[in-house]
Length: 245
Image (cartoon, rainbow, N blue to C red; front, side, top):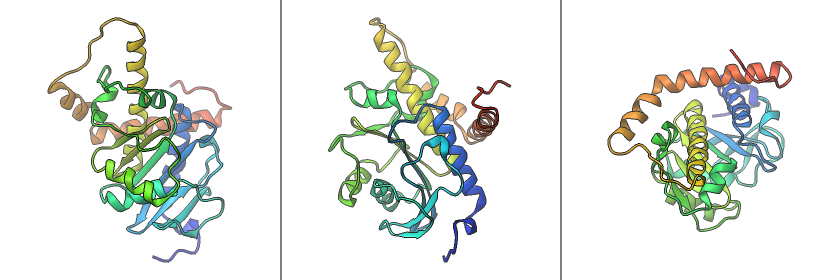
């Protein structure tokens, strides 16, 4: 695949990556280091959001095409130092087309505890198999560590990076955004429940899978995505006024 410019890449992908980035901002995934979102273009190439950029600042021109060895092919700006986190997972997970690495506060706090994720709310039901990568708490800036992350992330859609952040993956951009959002929500509400210092209930048994299938099925995620895009359009067209339909 030969590309002369970012504009030659599917415009819908760039548009959706931009909407996804701004959705993550609105959902509280922004911090001083922000994170990255990437998308598989071919078997051996990905688009990745450039470094040193807030989620809310992202435009369709802020993506760089790299190969799975981290070489720039198309695009300007700094390639994120954590590109090996992305490329090694793409190498290992042929089912993955999109990847998010972010630092949402409740997920980072939850990942620093020994708590077991429980479906206190609906949000947790599709991410109950979230594991924790605890070999290091540092940023993943070399392929050796990236490969170890990938080895620990052979199944599932979300992963805690101990004292660091999260990884979410999916077959599409809307799906991956959804997993990143629900993991943060699940951690937030469980930590709140834990703070009350009193017993609390949560969904158990077969209902977990039933809820996940109904509430987070393909059609539902498509509708959630439309809502997130409407919310982004309203917020950024109205000077940061929250979206109220």
